Image (cartoon, helix red, strand yellow):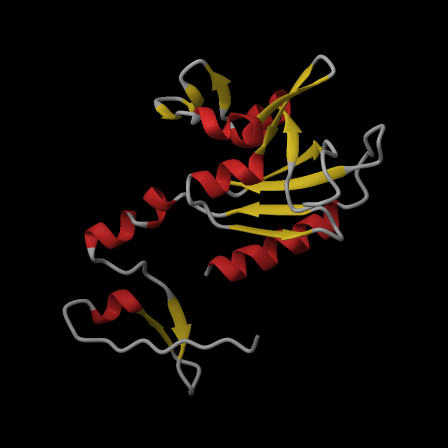
Length: 170
């Protein structure tokens, strides 16, 4: 599922790739919580081009997170910034505060898929959101055709044992 969402993210990024360029020529497409946002990518290091540094204004616009004294927060959710990781997450560049969105995702165990060629970063659900369905022990419903083309939903088999076999060509 996550890989399918990442491929969708890359396709959306390719479609948006003709957006307005920043002064340094770097734009990035961020897909966070299913929302596509064009941001200005701030170049920091050629050593790790997978790191996506963005302004705090872009951080809030793309993710609804903002930097507060308590940490990186969105509504009641707040992640403290460890002192030993502060420089890898937040920096001043000139008069602008910039934020490493990729490092933040790694810190909170959030999956990431990115395409450096097209500057597209897809951020999957955070670990707590991933585990929500596990706590209910209920698989999400879906509908697929059988070999004869008849549609079947998982919910049609509620209360019965079901063996799901999945595969992918990649």
